[in-house]
Structure formats: C-alpha cells, structure tokens
Length: 184
Image 1 (tube, rainbow, N blue to C red):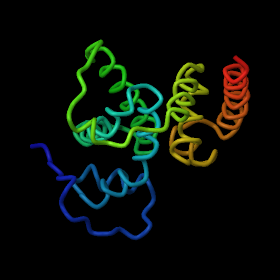
Image 2 (cartoon, helix red, strand yellow):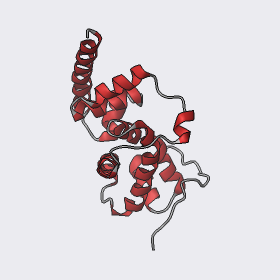
Image 3 (tube, rainbow, N blue to C red):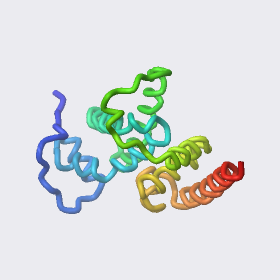
C-alpha cells in the first residue's frame, strides 16, 4: 500500500534533523519531513527548470517534480543521494516537457494580466540558456535563485571546486556574449 502525503496539509516542524534522516522520515510518510525537503530544495529545482524551459511553465513543473519524487521516494536506495536524485528528476521532467510541448502556444487571458519580466532580464536569461549546460545550470542557480557556491555544490552533488570553476568560466562567457550584443 502506497503512503500518500498531501503537500497542502499543515506541517509539524522538525527541529534541525539531518538530511538523510529527513529523507527516511519522508519515506515513512512524514509530511513535515517532505515539507522541509521541499523548502530546502525548491530553489534548486526551480533553477534547473528555469535553465531549460519557458519561465511561464516553471512553477507548475516544480510541483510536478516534487510529486514525482514523493511517489518514487521508496525506491531511493541511498538517502544521501537525494539531492542528485532530485536534480535528475528535475532535468528529466524538463526534457519530457520539451518533448511534448507544442511548438506554438496561444496567449492565455491570465498571461495578459501578469506583469512581464523586463526585456533586459529576458535577454540575459536567453543568453545564459545559450551557454553550455554545465555553466547554464550553475549560473541560473547562482544569479536567478540566489544560491551560494557551497549551496549549489551541496544541493546538486557537484564538488565545490567544480561549481567554482563553472561559475567563473560561465560568468566570463556570459560577459563576453553580453558585451558582444551591446557593441552591435
């Protein structure tokens, strides 16, 4: 019998448990533990998705990633692998979205009422999305989601040195591309 956890039910607060403990508690059906995992990793998942799919689709897909993770959590063998495992679910969900997404879409009435992002921000986001994947993801997590280098390393499973190098090289490429656009 599968345990179902409502993401909308009130959560009891767990006092500073370790991550593997949170994963184990969530696997056993603790809404509070899964809620804390959500709080801890939602920005990372959001950043991974922003690097790959249209911004208007990201919020719904973040929820889909966590619902899928919740259903698949019993199959996770190593609790310490949770961050990388969740990252891979997010990447795969983005790939699945891109495979099934229509090539064109009509504007919805709700989209017309939302304040659109600034054109410069969209240009920078498009420029970041054109960078190699290793740089794209770490730059989005740093610049859009506001994660620090050590947080990116911890949450994605990359080494701190890899994150530092990816951020350094990615920022250099981003600067070059943005400066190239401004001189046109």
